Picture 1 (cartoon, rainbow, N blue to C red):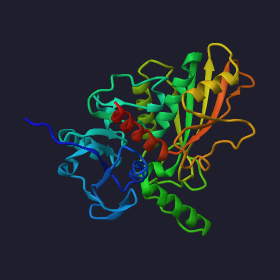
Picture 2 (spheres, rainbow, N blue to C red):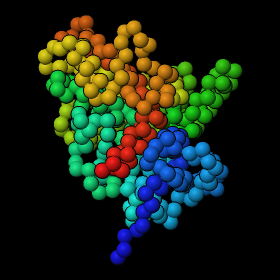
Picture 3 (cartoon, one colour):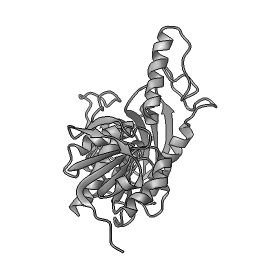
Picture 4 (spheres, rainbow, N blue to C red):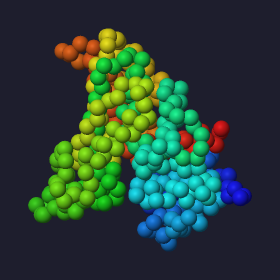
Length: 335
C-alpha cells in the first residue's frame, strides 16, 4: 500500500473561522512552516476570507481536503476533532490539536516547545499526533516546571477567564449584556444563563450551554498529563471575569525552604516567562494582548506565612495557545 503524498509547506486549519482558528491563521501566515494555508470549517464552508495576505475560500472540513497537507491543525470544536483526526492521519498529515480533543487520546503527545530545556514532553516525540495545551494549562505547567527546583510543597493557581474562551458567542453575549445593562434593559443569557457583565462568577446558570467546572477539569487534566509526576501538581480554580480577551491569574506556592525572590525571577525567565519589575506596568488582560509569552509581576513573599510566595500574571488566551501550536510544527519541521 503506497503512502499518501504530502506537500511540504501545505497546512490545513480546521475551524478556520473560530477565534482560535483566526489567530492560528494569522501566525501561520508569518511562519516558515506554511507556504500554502488551506482553510477548512464544518459550518462556514464557501465563505470568502484571506490567508497570508491573499484571498482564500473556506472549504468543507471533509477527508479529501486533508490530502497533501503536511500539518493539519484542529482549532474548532473538540467533538469535530475527535471524529476526524484519524482522517487527517490517514491522509499522511501530522496532526496538531488545539481543541482539547486529543488530550483524551493516549497516543497523542502533549508539547510545550518553550519548555524543551526545562521539562520536555513526558513521552517520546514520535508519530504524527500532537496536542497543544490550552493557555491556562500552558501557564500552570510552565510555572510548575520553572519552579520545580525549589521543591514546592504546595502550589495553586486561580485563573480569571475571558468570555472569548467560549468563542464568538461568548464575546457577543458580554457585549450585549453590557450595553443592555447601561440602558436598563433586560439582558440576554443564551450562553451563560447568568449575568457576566460587571460581575465575577464561580459557576453559570443551570441552563447554560457551557460550564466552568468543565473548563477547570480540562485544565487540571492537561497539566497532570504533561507534568506526569515530574513536578508539583498545582491545584487549579477558575473564575469567570467580565473581560473579552486575555487570562489574568494569581498563583501561590509554598517551598521546602526559603529563597530569594530574585532566584524565583531567574527560574521563571529561564522557562521563557517575561518577569516585569516593580517599576514596570503590571501584567493585565489588556496589556498582554498580542503577546506570545506569559507575563508575570516579580514574585512577592507572603508577609505572614513562611516560605510562601505570590505571583500575578496574564496571558493572551488566543495568541499563546496558537503560538504554541505553530511552535510544535516548526520544531517538527526542523527535526
